[in-house]
Image (cartoon, rainbow, N blue to C red; front, side, top):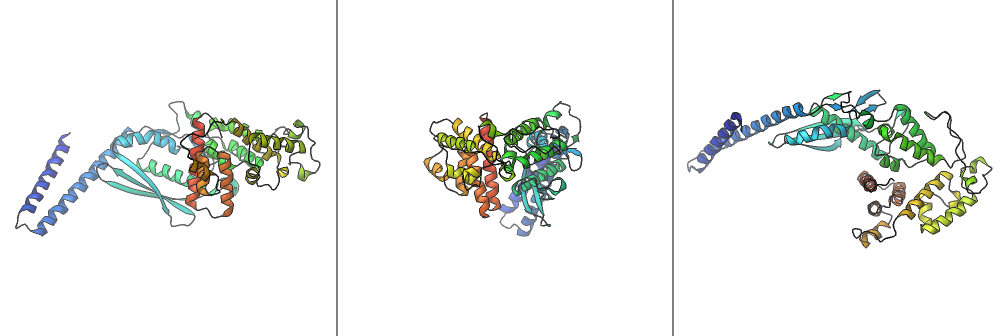
Length: 406
């Protein structure tokens, strides 16, 4: 303990002793006692503020520079992601007695959301900050590229990033001293447009896709996952007989997709309106696969929004085929004891709780189907939507930890 700290402790102890002496005196003046207590509170608050300022100074001195590891394609500028900022800052801030608590409030403008941050120090002093950000679900050209849930989540993430960086005056740099920039950076503007185009053409489930790729939108996809994402989306298109749009960004010169009808021995439909539907041979094969996998036909029709399986498109056929592959790949052993019979029964009910239970049981595809059904009712609250999104993310994390991929 340094001399200044010893002095402060001595002064505080002397003041407390004086208050105790006055309080124990029978003829003590209550007005004077109240003034002494007020004085003690001011002294303690001042000491807490000084400890806060001293710790803040140490944090700013000890925190390393953070590499701008992502690119904002709208402004053509680079920035550091929240993960990169927290990785550098939080260990230093915690070591010096700081804790951050974030929340949200209504902003002055209806289209914005207020992100709040309460910075607390172990000495007792705290400060509050906030920033108002728009909840934007659109990208370049006004195209919708986020669900309402992901738009809110994106605004909160950016708000936390801005506040954390400003509060602790985190130094940012364009140089990567560790040589990890290529690993941590996001995809380029052109690559983002290509993936967005593929998502639209393949009619992929964007919620499931972004949960699997672990990004809020196409512009936050890590560069290291670009090829993996493109390969998966192009495979989804491989069963379509429609030639890819040669004007698609980053996709010039792509070859025509293979016709799965020929592979299965079926004839290609003659009319353009039926060109994307499965053939009779594919339908026959699908029925056999459903029976072999023990899948629920009604649930599959509900998931793909079909009245009859013969109305299934070739894109849906491929997606269904992959779902059945995953179902058959599951071990036939009984469910782990952590999943009770009550939980299993709950998973069969078309409710928010049942959908969450399916996510917990690892039945991600079925849970996503139920989620879509619940969305159609229009009765889901924002809190329920956020809870479902968290359950989906947690299920994806568990699957990833086991070495799989959704």
